[in-house]
Length: 251
Image (cartoon, rainbow, N blue to C red; front, side, top):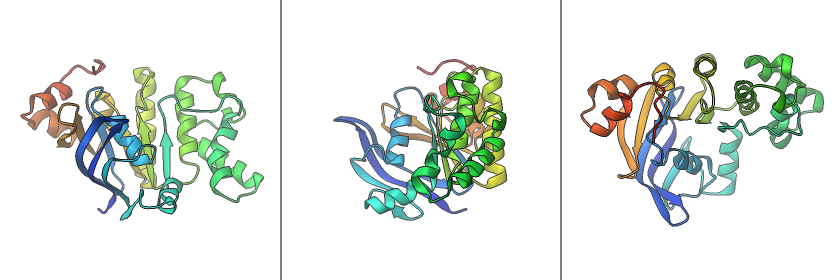
């Protein structure tokens, strides 16, 4: 497999607070990579650096071999080929679910209104929400809002899908259904998936590979499959994380 994204020597954080220092890893084409660790370890900060929301203090983030921070065109090209979902779904309450899914199409394409509706409706069909196309986001459940956010992230047929704590706020059954949907999209479309999470059930259910961050070292302390890290790591931090009870909060 080829590396879709390479993170090299990344150093960064918030304002003057260092969170990450010397982070190196690759995201391989077609895999589901999970970025895990206890709260405060820098998972979401790392994703925000990768997405171009926070500029790294040092290091590079390469997409298809091009540093996304090298120039505005490189960043714009990357964003057109990435899809992003956030914890809350981040849907606009003054728009219908269908109109929310159409937003990336309005921003990045020259499709006609009818064409945008067709594409958006197709994405809602993929996530099982076609019958709720005209509904307001506030009229559906949290799980449906997450699926609508996923449909919007898929609007431009992205090469890479980013998820920030997709199971946050969901009950175990709804979370498992969302996991299955993510895995189905990954396997059927070959979409590379990057997920920030601390949910053990999801980590073991759908990840191909895991990288674990640690707040004290400000970097990666383990890489491998979830079962390799659970059963083979000698690092007490890694063992404690992967051997806690499913559903136990990460503090």
